[in-house]
Image (cartoon, rainbow, N blue to C red; front, side, top):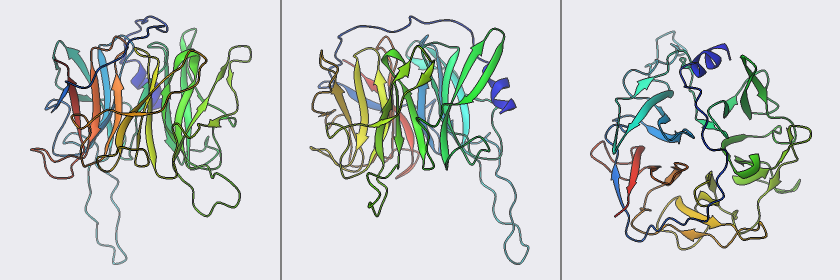
Length: 314
């Protein structure tokens, strides 16, 4: 945890506008997709997160320069091969391109690190951690709060986390958290499906209310993944194998919000965004100018590799 605190000091303390109330809609019908050569490599690269100020990007990668996994040995005491761990990398947006990414060494370890999600501003972040002494289950959601002059790291709480698996958080309007969980649908359920949940923030107690599984407009009997709330549009993005149309694997969908707070029927982002491979972990800057997502589609880095792509508008 101490390394995570040290990492935060790398970030500037610039506040972004709190929460937009825009009714913008991004039109993907004429958009095109191209791989980001700065953010992608011959390793795995995924789960980009754009800071509220629109300048900083964090993402996960096991590219050259990441920490090596701890050395392990087989039953004959022979060393097993060591691979690069999944680490957090940082870059800055420079117009239409990015600076050369750099690993956040104070945060990264020989274990796998996951995504960090920015909250309402640069002083509030969320992340998931697994097999931690402060976890209630396999993986829990945690948050950072900058209080006075100190970073405070806390478990989001039992109203959100369970004895099961909670991960892939996204911060939304009014502080609502959207995340993925394998919490069973019922006690009789034989398998735990990956569904998207939401938890509202109580401004009186400064805690999160009981998490709720989102309805059929989002979740299906198949797999869902990587929810993302777009402040630019007041819309919820996510990936799914169960909605239609579906062009293969996990496709990216968008649910717009109605005036009464309910969600509209999800719309597929289209063939020029989705592929026959898994497409997920979309992120959109709060001004709508930068859109990134992860995909396993073939690229010059290899077939079935995991890379970061950017959406280019006409």
